[in-house]
Image 1 (cartoon, helix red, strand yellow):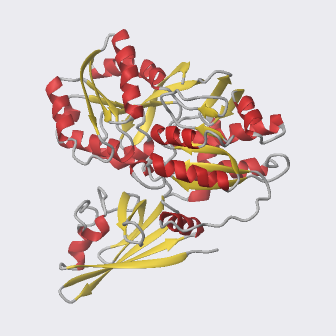
Image 2 (cartoon, rainbow, N blue to C red):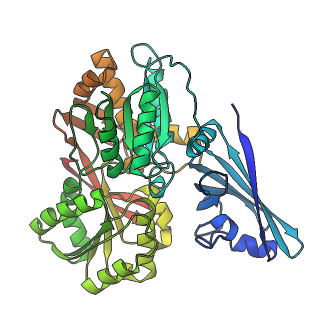
Image 3 (spheres, one colour):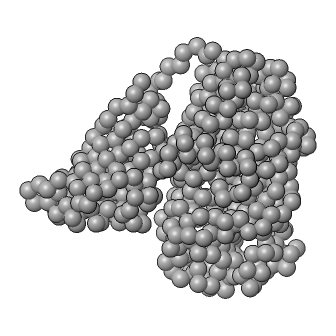
Length: 477
């Protein structure tokens, strides 16, 4: 199947030149498909809210890939599907007619069908099926943007090496919409479609919901990105960095950079940020830090003024940013707008390259991340991965980060375990996955039979809209 095109139209009572120049400045106002971006230039990141039927408009994340002032803009995007959106601006009586044309490929059509509650039939599998549950929509779609792309590369490599048991592996992808209940339903759908292993690149709340929903199915659930730990069992594997190790690696050098020891803990009001801050209350005082405040805000918060004002009043030197995805970007932008960045540094354990792009270069000064992978890592494996990624998905695809690259690793771990076990039986594959030493784009990753993952962690500093690793430390992730 190729692509299909859909269209929508708006009218603005101003000339095309005004419409064009105001593109991206109307988020929340309904102006020009609610577009949001920092600048009108090729390569600039942008969000559009597109009316495509179903339960409300669709948020599309992409980049401006072509423009011609004042008549046209093209946005190439990867979320919630890969495609292009073209905006045409034409003079009309009393103002400007804005026409939007969207390309939707087969995966996009499937996503839209499921979003509207319609069944998506699956044929007979030629080999084993595995599932990937990620956040193609909702607040977490920001940090999940490259997930399906990098999973596609992993699948190509696995099948290029003969698949598993001499048969090609098929990957089915589902969207939790950053909602645990939706995630549980979509995970059950993947199981009904024949997936004996389901990979999660989602929030911890969705992991908990999926783990419970699949309790009696005998299915292996693997959460690949950083997480707080807990909830593991024979068929529940959680990979990725852990907050205590991240804080242990980053705290001392960050306090030296800040010239102070006062920390303020802030984050979304749900399990992962609260566990990050619980770890901070143990780790930070042990290295000489002083905690001066703690605040939370619900997922989807748009105005962080009370939190920012509390941070400013506390005299903090470092802010531990436990917000995720779109919330993390909005929080950092508001910190910058309210002058907080002139007196504090920020550490985001889940701050990744895609989120940093949405913060924008002008607001990124002073932001730090800590993880086992950054796109700028200088390793042979990473260079090869990035070359393949750009060749496959082009210059406008979202950057890789530790969150999305973790899916690439998890799928390769699964394939290696299935080959060693000579079966895709979830119990035997899970046992094999828990022990091994792997060479990945981030370097050496070791699993020793416990529920921890040993890897090198890096503290990185935002330089413009790019993270640059500053130093490595050998600690358990």
